[in-house]
Image 1 (cartoon, rainbow, N blue to C red):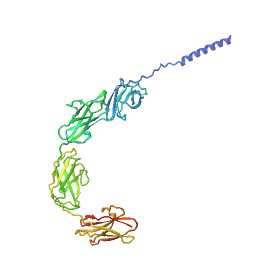
Image 2 (image 1 turned 30 degrees about the horizontal axis):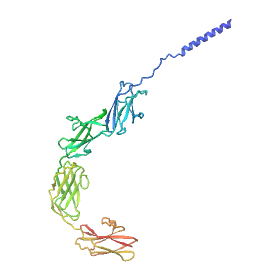
Image 3 (image 1 turned 135 degrees about the vertical axis):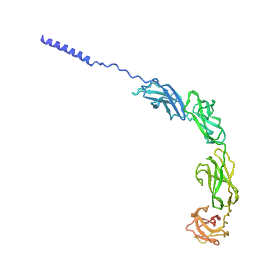
Image 4 (image 1 turned 180 degrees about the vertical axis):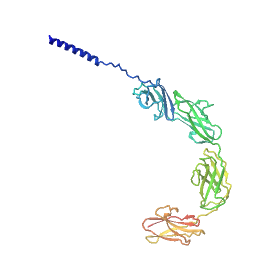
Length: 418
């Protein structure tokens, strides 16, 4: 009886322990639900810029949104892929395919990376957007100009004005090129354009371009230096023309015997400072020019194409004539197998200075190539010279006569073969 009682007690104790354990392991935590998704971006709008698009949107509650993702599809049946992201409510997009419509949509993202459903889809076309006056010219000499406008989408109307607030401007039907009359008065003119685009597109910012209206060219003065000098061959004359405030134009001077000498405003060739409206050049008196009390006349065409009235220098130009030496006639022969014998006609000029003999292994000997000179003879009566030939082949010779003013004249070119 005692054993049976012990067994019953043990069984009851075990049942109580099992019941106690079941209460201990039972979860007391409430059922956890998934976080809410962030709000879907709404009211997508786009503004077109030059080769760019600015996309904007709204959300009903921005408190839970940490980031926005922008997705792109390049066709109606292509899948969307992540293109860009931002923490703001608008984003300027560059690198889009140009002149081709693409589709965009936006999602919002929470800090724990839960993403909303995508927004509505908006279609945009990025491309070149610009305005040009006279196709980008810097100057115009007339108030009547043409305005070219490039946009990647269809435009319905345009307003053109020199006032940025478009006061008094009237919308007109859009064409890629349209006439426009600039306001009176020379100077920089800015033309603004405001477009009404089709299909609800808007432009980001305002289009504008500048052009300089220049309706008149004027020469202030013309002169040359040094003054009160009679110039000779080889002398340097500095010619000047002043066109105050006129840069980028074309200037020249002329005088009896010389129809045109171009002047510069580039800071080179005798001009001291580039683009200052002072045009000048360093001119070397050539052979054969003779001027006695000649008038120096300046001409000028400005960058806009206006021609100024000609102007004369206050002083007269004098250049004393000079003649080039009388050339000699050359003959060459071999005295033996290694020696060339040169002989030429005598030069009888009063201002004779020297004969200079040139030799080359190719045709076309030029006096400027001093490396070809093999002898200088200062005796006017000497009209022969022997030249030793170290190798075989064909040799070419010329004799140049130099006078006391370093003017020169070359003989005929003669070849000899050893």
